[in-house]
Length: 121
Image (cartoon, rainbow, N blue to C red; front, side, top):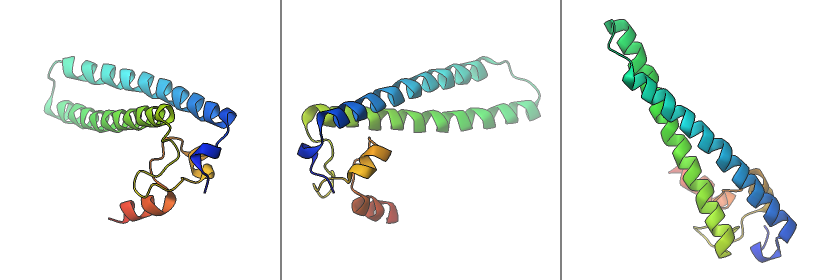
């Protein structure tokens, strides 16, 4: 485990940059998904088979958009933790999150142990 205060500035800058890049890519994807949903909603009614297929696609896009927005929120929260000085601490047990985990998933809120417990529930 790594003490967040011992994470060097270059690494913090790298993680911040990666979060911003991920946020930009995800934001563009959300906009495209919104546009696709709007196009489907504006499509005039057609035969029942076609409408059922479009409803299925719209439902999938809506779920995808929800997941994307959740990921954006996670990234925004990680950026806020970077600014507040709480980045790198597990939000559940307050112990440092392993540096390898932060490198793999900079938006991580929990250490591996706490994450495993939460996922098991």
